[in-house]
Image: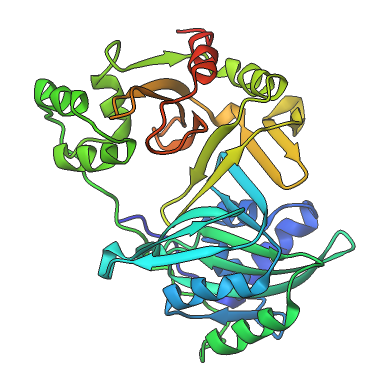
Amino acid sequence: MNHTLEQSADTIRPAWQELLTQEPNLRIREAAKRLGLGEVQLLATTISEDCVRLRGPWPDFLKRLPELGYVMSLTRNDACILEHKGHFDQVNAFGKGNHWMATVIGPIETRVFFSSWHVAFAVHQEKNGRELTSLQVFDRAGDAITKIFLQKESNQDAYQSIVRDFRDDDQGAEQSVPGTEEKTYTDEVDQDSFLADWDNLKDTHDFFPMLRKHQVHRYRALELAVEKYTYQIDPEALEGMLKRASQTKLPIMIFAGNRGNLQIHQDKVRTIRMLERGHNGVERWLNVLDPKFNLHLRLNMVDTAWVVKKPTEDGIVTAVELFDAQRNLITQFFGLRKPGIPQRSDWADLVATLPKI
């Protein structure tokens, strides 16, 4: 199990304040990592009328988000952030227990895994002269799953109604973080049997059940399929890939998220910018900066990049998948397509130009 340290609010507050004294612009997520805590443990120490703890039922909570109108939805992991402005149009929850899920379809598109949702907060704060109002959801390790930021067009009354209806009776300044269960995988995989199942894939959504059947980690799966369905490319080619997609107006799909939420971009990308932050370019960020969509990809955390091909009833579907040094999936890129339609030839051609390593 992945445990997070339990500390009292009286211990956390001064330690956090000391960090902010040294680095006033330090983000709460980074401060939590420095202190060996979950982000939610720091946030809970600010509980007040401007920071309210919320509780589920989470499917009911999610179904209320369309009431907010126009918002910004942010989902991230350590190396990739997706931000979309728009509406929560269609929310469909299904399943039960640990398999309770939801799909959000529309301008904001996500896949939600409620078994990882632990606690939420309604937060109103002032930052750099701006007032920010948001709903923030966290997992059992205290990491942020998703954050929904109100915009000037958002329905403030709906926000207040959601906060009232889901307000937790417990508004104490300490937050439990029981930790997350780490998945286990087998070290012995029958490669022939595994690749035979890969040969017989009918849909890209069959890939994860195949991994589960063989109890194989996603990264190990790509290693097993090298040269037949997968190969590595130079991560430095990613900037050029996005710029080429922008120049040719090629619509693409970008998937990024965490154990509780997967956010999806389905459109063209337009403005591509590289940004370096920190001393000697410690952080290298590849950005898409479009009016209603932002991508922030920390390139120096991308350890490997793979081209992955999956057979489907509509032909081969090609993805570019990025992993960090711990072999965690960071993000995936596809050419935009719908079920029943073959992948775009211009996407396949673009991927074919990416340099192998």
